[in-house]
Amino acid sequence: MTVHIEGDAGRVVGPVPRRLFGSFVEHMGRSVYTGLYEPDHSTSDDRGFRGDVLELVRELGPSVLRYPGGNFVSGYRWEDGVGPDRPVRLDPAWHSVESNRFGLHEFAAWAEAAGAEVMYAVNLGTRGIQDAADVLEYCNHPGGTELSERRRANGADRPFGFKLWCLGNEMDGPWQIGHKTADEYGRLAAETARLMRMIDPAVELVVAGSSHADMPTFGSWERTVLRHTAELVDHISLHAYYQELHGDTDSYLASGAALDRFIGTTAGIIDETLTELGLDKKIGISVDEWNVWDLRRWNEVDQARLAEGGWREHPRIIEDDYTVTDAVVVGSLLSSLLRNVDRVTMANQAQLVNVIAPIRTEPGGPAWRQTTFHPFQRVAALASGVSLRLSVEGDRIRTAQHGEVDLVDVAATAGESGRGAVFLTNRATASPTEVRIRLRGARYGVYAAETLTTPEGGTRHTTNTAAAQPVRPVPLPGAAATSDPGGTTITVTLPPLSWTVLQLSLQAASHA
Ligand code: AHR
Figure (tube, rainbow, N blue to C red):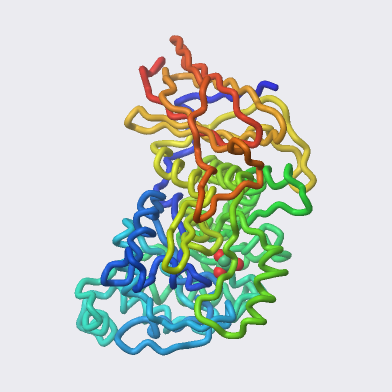
C-alpha cells in the first residue's frame, strides 16, 4: 500500500501557537499530592516540589498549565489555598478530602519552575461574579487593596499577572457541580467577564463550550452561550476524550479525524453566531481538555472504589496505564491540533501527572514516562513556525464510529530556522504502509526519523511501568529525501500501528 501526501511550502494553515502544547493540573486523585507535590520525597525541595517530576515536566515541555480544575473547581473556594490557615474540606466532585496544603501561591511557584504560563479557572458552579473578581484582584492587582495586600502578605510582592482565565468548567455537563442551562451559564459568564475586564482589561477569557461532541446540547449550547458572551470573550472551549470501545481499534485510531470534525463544527458555529450578531472579531477555540481516557474503567471500577473507600485524601483515581495504541492515538490528536491552528488558539492535554497523565509517580518512589509522554514531548519540541496544508491520497479505512478516514494521518510544520517536521500516524494495524511525500517549494533533507510502535517482544497493548519503559520512539531506518528544482520528495515506510516523526532541514527554497 502506498499513500501519497502533497503539500507546498507556501500553502499554510497558519502559525503554530506555543499555547497548543498546554497541559492541566487539577486537584484530583494524585495529580498534586504525591504527584508533583510530596514534601517527604527524597528529590523534593524545601517547597515540597518533587525534583524528579519537575525534571520530566521540563523535558515534556508544556507551555501552559490549566489549574485548579476541572470538575474540582466548581466546588472550590480559592481562598482556602492561600495564607497560613488551610481548612480541610470535602471535595464533592471527586469524593475526596482536600487538605489545601497546596494552593494558589504554591502552584504559581511550581508553574514558574516548570517554565509554563498559568491558565486559571474560576468557580462558576457554586460561586460566581464576586468570587471571580476577587481571585483576579488577588492575583493581578499590584497592591493597596485588601485583596492585593493579602497576596503580598502571603509572600507574593509582585502580582502573578495571570493572563488566561477560564469562566468555569464544563457547565453543560449534568455531572458538574452547579450545572446550568446554556442561558443561565451564558448570562453568568457574560457578567463575570464584564467585571473581570473592569478589574484587569488585559485578561484573555475562555468561555465554556461543550464537554464532548456527543453532548445532546452540542451546537445549541455554543450558540446560546456566544449570544450572551461573544463581545466579551476571546476563546470558547471544547473538551474531547477518546477511548477504544468493544475492541473497535479502527474507530479508536480514527480519533484524530473525529477531533478535526469536532473542531470544524465548532468553528462553523462560532462564525455563524458572530455573523448573526454582526460582530467583526475572532473567537479562538481552546481545546482545554483533550486526551485518551478509558472512561469505562472510571465508571465501572474507580467510582465504586471511591464509594467503598469513603472520604480520603488523594485517592488513586483514573491512573490509566497507557499502551502503544494509546500513544499512537495521542500522536494523531496532536496532528489534528496542528492541522487546525487557524481555529485552535490553545490546547491542554488532560492531565499532567498521575491522572490520565503522561507522567506517573509512586509515593516515595520513582517518576516515569508513560507511552503517551513521547508524542507530546516530540511535537512540543519539534513543531514550530507554520503548519502546512497537506492533502492525502491513497487507501482509506471504514470505521464504525467515525466513517471513512485516511489510512495515514499527517501534519507537518515548517520553522523559520529552516527546520521542518512531519508527523505521521499509520492506522494500518497489521501491515506497514509506504508513504511518498511531495513538498513543493522547498528543498529539504531528512536528518532524523523516529517511530513509536510495538516494541520487540511486545504487543500493541504493551505499557510502560515504574520498572521498565520499553515503549518510546526508536530510530526508523530507510527514510530518504531527494530534492529537485521544484521541491522535495520524501519516501518512508511506516511500521504497522505506529506514530512517526521526520525531522527535516532546509537545504534551499526552490521557487519564489
Ligand atoms: O480531566 C478529568 C475531568 O474530565 C475534568 O475534571 C473534567 O473537566 C472532565 O470531565
